[in-house]
Image (tube, rainbow, N blue to C red; front, top):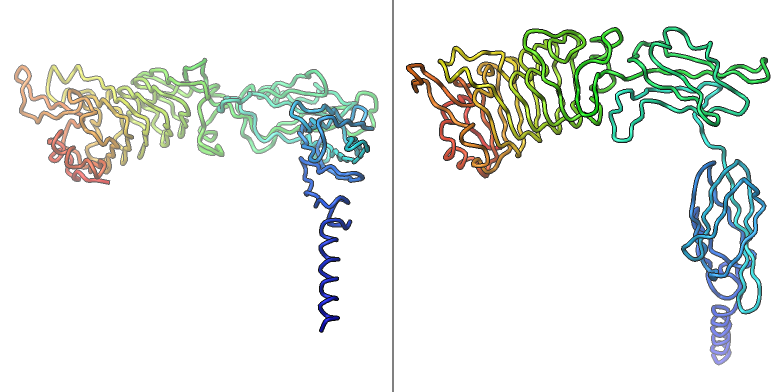
Amino acid sequence: MRKRIFALMAFVSLSLACVVGCKSDADDGVGEKPRPSTEDSFYFRNGAKHTIHMTEREDRVVFLEGVSDNFTFTDNAGTGLTIVQGTVSTTLNIRANTQGTYEIVIADTKEGAERKATLVVEVAPRDTGWRDGVYTIEDIDGDKTEANSNDYVDVEYPDGYQYDSSSLSSEASTRITVSSQAGNIVRVTAKNHYDSSAPLEFKLKHKTDASKTPLTVKVKRVTKFWNYSGTYLYGISNKDYVTQYSFTNAPRVPKVPYSVTYVNSGNFSTGDATTLYGNPIITRIDLNNVETVHSYAFSNSANLETVIAPKVKRIYYGAFYNTKLAKIELPALEELYTEHSSQLNGNYGSYDVRYNIFPATIRSIIIGKNIKKIGYYAFNGTENSLAELRIGVEAPTQIDKNTFKYTPEGHNYYGNPVPQGPIGKVNNAALYVPNRSLAEWKTVHPWITTVFTGGVRGY
């Protein structure tokens, strides 16, 4: 029994000694367990070696753990890497310039003894988009629809090549312009809309070796729908290149330029394929950042079926008259501005339908919580088509009572019956308002319970 106790004590003593002093694969030789190194951190210990992976033109900050602020480094990278000691202590700022494998030897002194470790940087070639000698541009955003959009695409090509201007066909030259830039860059700029099935093409030929196969740049699509200037949208960019097919078959609803906030006023009796009003080819439009849609803007564009209007605040009379809209959502709307002078001089029948904001095809109108003014006869012409009018306002007093009211026929103005209000006649629609304020809506605007024959409901 005594022998077993002594043996156990000896084993425990040996185990404890190893815990505090033995060297093993699990520590760094001084009893400290190494931390794992990653793609952006290197746990420094004498003799260690760690590899990180980068691509050409990539920048990275690598944190060095376990070294002092006085560490030094040497490398064999030449121009392959740019290495700078970071302003944050114990970091290296590394920029990968050229494909290759490079070593950075890091040295540090601790307790009078120099320690060294090696960071290996493997730099892979950058993907410049070429595939078997072909570079494909899926789309050039000629309308500059996003905040940082360009109406061109820069193509980087290999050393030894140059743009062959004779390779650009006459057809392609009507849709794009191609220009050489500093360095190995050729710039392809949108000129006119293009959406045919066969891509546009041009070549890059070798400068000195005619036997080398030329490189090919293909452009599948050029998006350039709109005629605009700054914040104003006026019409279609070019009716010779933008067709009804262009609108109907675009991969997404054609979006107006990011800078545009105002759709110019139109005309109720004219228009053609170059304007937004009286336009037979426009079927869909995303108004993007537009805030104001002016009078007759899309009037008589008889094939317009889809309007996306996330930021529209003001819509003027006649804006969508005689289009094919069935539904429209207006989450940011503040005012429906109407032309109402004629109803003050006669009865309902004298009101000119060309002032109607919405078409007789509309089934659903959804208005957000910001609406403040709804002009007289704003929903005129929707009596038989509208099924749903949804208004997201919780406080009905927010809407100007002078512009949101209803005076039944029989009210006389110089002997003429003059119904005044956003609903010129009794409407078959149901009015939906927020549940929590349904009762208040009926109190503040009591006429709504008789005008909307579909009922007034909460949602």
